[in-house]
Image 1 (cartoon, rainbow, N blue to C red):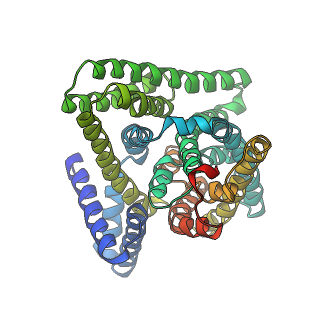
Image 2 (cartoon, rainbow, N blue to C red):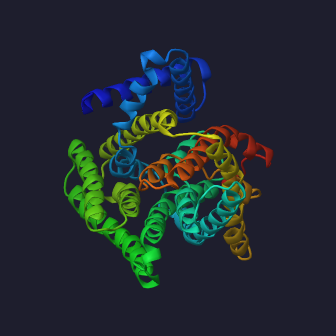
Image 3 (cartoon, rainbow, N blue to C red):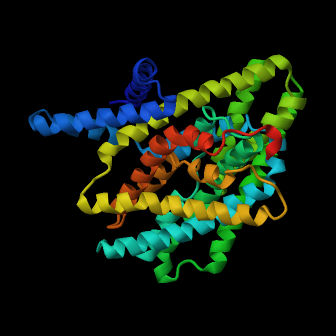
Length: 421
């Protein structure tokens, strides 16, 4: 199959599955696509088991393996999805909870990474599954950040207090970039640390350069695009400028070894707030936001479809099923602690909505980014366990947490007024 054939197949399946979901299941669009894709994967497995001579499973799996999930997500969809999410976020509301967002996106990710790594390493030892602590840290790093794509998608369907929503959205946008940097460091340690190829200074330098360098690049690129847009009033060209801003910024960040996710988030926040206010006419603002809403919906559809289908390329066995099952409560417990610590400290000086810790914990969805990072790992004896655990957490997160988020909010007394945060 050519690249065009694969794209046509994915978009066609997204439309077909989305239609089935809309007419029959009536689940939130992204969750419905995952559920139907998982069901389709189950049908393929069953058909292959019943009639192995037809090679249905091999044909579908071969097609999926031709899609480099890591490249597709991390160097294709991610930049566009992050910008589409950031451009709709009110930076004033982010600023109102800047310390909570900053702590959860840094300290919270670090706490969760360490807790997940320790617990999954101990669990693997009990199950007699070989998983060195350095590789357990890799799993902790890739699964600890919440996924902005999944989180922002579910926030469209659940009403939560305004500033709490800003905190959830802001954390997911920034801890994703931080998480990728931490993941890169952990992989470097796991693959080269034993030979002394990376030390504490190199780790610190990598984190500072990637994170702060990415933020600086995003601000500079966003400001350059803002200056260009302020001089014209042509909505089609200005939409093109925002698209070029995303793609070029992410490409430069990748080649400069800076954090691309952080760069496009900063650029998106700048254009969506300062740019929309001072560089766009009403017509331009409407066209720009509609373009990114449509892009977000289309890319989300394809991404969640792929998440559901990727189960066909994730090998499974009794041992892997056990480690996958135990990973779910471990990640949830780590999320609870990593949220409770910074929020409890900040609550000494600030007031938070009732149930804020519970909502932040349950609303910390994982998605395609975690799967992409797991698939990008080098082919080692530890990759299957990490991949199985990652996939289990992601599917549970999207389906179970996503579908019950509204009930959790209502169970905590329902959404509060905007002033209650």
